[in-house]
Length: 132
Image (cartoon, rainbow, N blue to C red):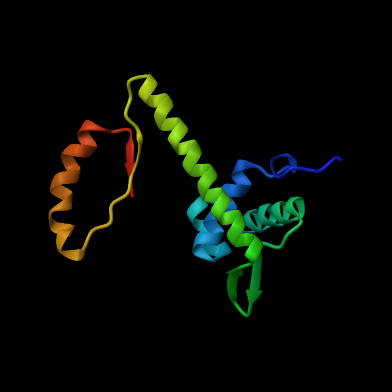
């Protein structure tokens, strides 16, 4: 039994990153802009990924882009994969005595005046931590 496995089908981390950006924005144009790539490059990479996986990941109806069932599964897996890689990167950095990672904040509108005062000193103390 010689089954081709997902990770051996020529799908690259870059393709997964491109796919995730398109899937989250539901726009090839916006994803290309965000990734600093030509729209044609994004479309080409998505096509190669779909061919390697054997599934259509998006469906276009009119001018709108939608994820297929397979696309939703690939997005879920892609998020899990990149989360695991981020976690590994943080653990390895901790072994070197560094603190790095991502800080994601969700605040109510009234907190927008308080957060910058708290975030400034944090950013100075932990320059390797990205925030978004």
